[in-house]
Image (tube, rainbow, N blue to C red; front, top):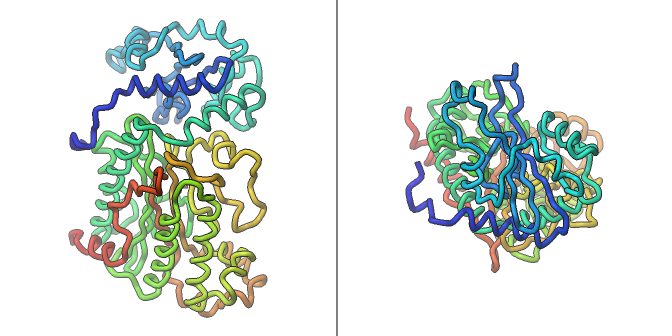
Length: 463
Ligand code: GLY
Ligand code: MN
């Protein structure tokens, strides 16, 4: 378990009450937020693990399945049933309504059956699981589905919550630091396991074991693969071959639901090949320059474009691209190798508040670009102190993209030169960067990024 120095003594109830008050200061109508329920896996008693809605968690600090909260003028009323007597047989003694209310500092608590009296005039946000949004739709008597953008007072509530959750308070930062600390330890375990691992699954097991041993969970499905070009690779069944690079994108989620999101890429045999090193160092240069640029007042899109420019410059220097880096970026040529955005908001969700679409990531009045090199940018805001963002440049050789681009980019890409880099399928380097009053703090900086450090760590693993 985390050492006591990682567990500062903060009063969670004070923090929760402050969040409730800040919401109350922004809206003049009540809000009802549902926690959600565990979705059935293959039959109703065998469920996927329960993860409460992040908006509910933000104001309660406790995942209470099937519960709802009513928020008005800073006051919180909890609606939840007492545990059914028969549940003791299967789940032991669980806290009753009054005990839960005390744990979260509720101002009042009633059975869930009384909730419909409170819904007229109240705003809400759709929860992701179907059972809950169906219930929300019935009780509120209007369509409330995750697929439908919020309207009317629901939109006003979503905008108010975005404003509050965009920047993190001390309570959130304690949890985010815990998640980062455990994730760093987890990645180190992966680096030390890779030389003796034969399969991707074994490296994943080494990484996730550290997270599970802290009684934490992963914040999203881990990506642990020798095919890093498959951006959200979700299988772990490949054999690790000498000369492969392994990409591990894994983050822990703290007990209160706060996420880390870290990616490292390292050579499974303990040494980067010259071609792997060349490309890695370009990605690292982009990573370092982008982190250095993080400070209040900076446009996140400009940080993305900085990464694009550095990648294009590096690829021109290596002879893979031909032309002026600025022009190559304007033509989106860099995006053949770096198709995604430089990162995203991080908080209770790994892509924080992405359930609200671009309401969270995009400044009001802005929308996604139709450009290939900008369309996947998840965050397009001016940075403010207290925001936590990821910086995650990458280089990928994605067969489907390169195949279809070959004709259009016949001259801007030196395809023969590119073929010499065939042992570089996918590289990403990702850190979690807090915007501070004067600049930034990298919450994940204790995990090395330099090739020599990564080689040393891999080689320190057992044989
Ligand atoms: N860690 C996965 C992602 O950022 O999409
Ligand atoms: Mn990420």
